[in-house]
Length: 241
Ligand code: GLP
Image (cartoon, rainbow, N blue to C red; front, side, top):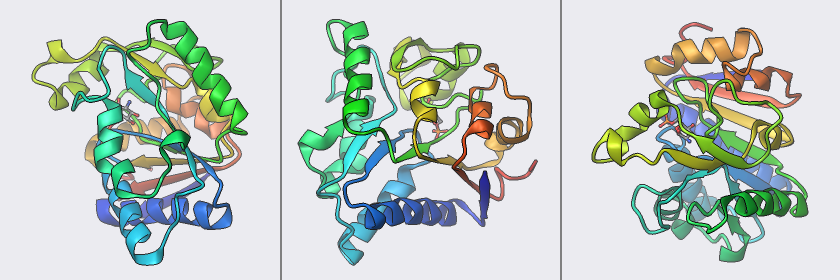
């Protein structure tokens, strides 16, 4: 595990964008795993800058997002479809047919999960997976105490996650109770993982995940067993390292 401590959020975002840009330069047909949440927002902004300034080319890139809420249509401003479109996809030259996000409106969610997992396999697996971390140690929407063995599946969100994510909704009641998420096993199969964490409120969980016991109680702790993880944190999130 490599740990990069950036001065602040902007530097963290630059470093993360550099790692992704390097992957794309090395292999213009890379398969990228993408994350949502507030942490990667500026990483996407930096990638858009690289697209305009350095001609970073996304035309052959395939993407798979980690997760999506169940029951939110794609045009709902709180959906991860909407987030990705407005913050990244519409600003670069990714090809629509190579963009994948789980469909939280699918009539049969189990079928949707199986098809999503199969599509990742068909694409040859994920070369570089970008991750944030929840306050409770979740990655994607893999909540504490769920099996490390899971592939893409339907998740019941924890109260802590519902509270944390309610800042984006009108009220905690408006936060969907379920989501589709790549599983820990899906994530662990990625060839490179880039984990981002920013701010003081992530410091405790980052230390637990990186140096604590490897346990489903802290889903991100499994990353200690991955051979190629790069953690990019800012100084505030690195306080307890
Ligand atoms: C959500 C997402 C995660 C994300 C986490 C942290 O629950 N499903 O993928 O890592 O929130 O979000 P933030 O970056 O806003 O702290």
